[in-house]
Image 1: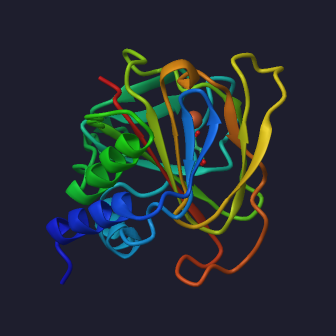
Image 2 (image 1 turned 45 degrees about the vertical axis):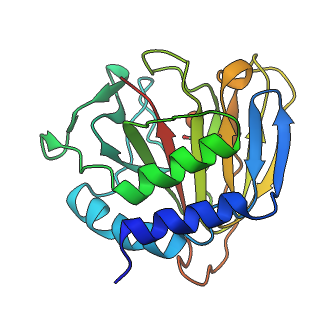
Length: 222
Ligand code: SIN
Ligand code: FE2
């Protein structure tokens, strides 16, 4: 069986490999295929996480059911309900702490952040987004974290999607970036509060994930 130590070596190999990094803006990088060697292990350890904290469609403060189904792992999990958006140590469905963040999740996020120029990223929260065909995420900023010193690291798995990477205002034109299985986007520093979102997922059949896209978004929330 693969261990997380083995996967750490794989991340290091990847960092040493010729870089496919694309700069999106000051503080923002797209690392194409960065998670390729780690993906089998990531998907393996994701299973018990979502068995313990199943995907669910949360409701926005305005009363809309989100089309993306979500879960979390880590010491804090992002939740939304009628009372607002916040981080919580416990899953409101079970009233138990969110599943621990697997070491290989954190290792990949730290390695991707370092590749993008953010040393010593130590995520305490991983939002797990599950998109089925038609699911989308409208333009938003990630701003429920306690401070904005740490970057956001976003790992795409499964079906391809079109990521919207906007500016500091909702009305700024957003770049449309096709993201494939194992692409990683990192934004921090001057890009930390950029608006971003995801276009409605096109139907397809991914070789390992079938008709879904899973996105892992790592944050330092607390
Ligand atoms: C998010 O902003 O939380 C998700 C972004 C994505 O699914 O790529
Ligand atoms: Fe976000």
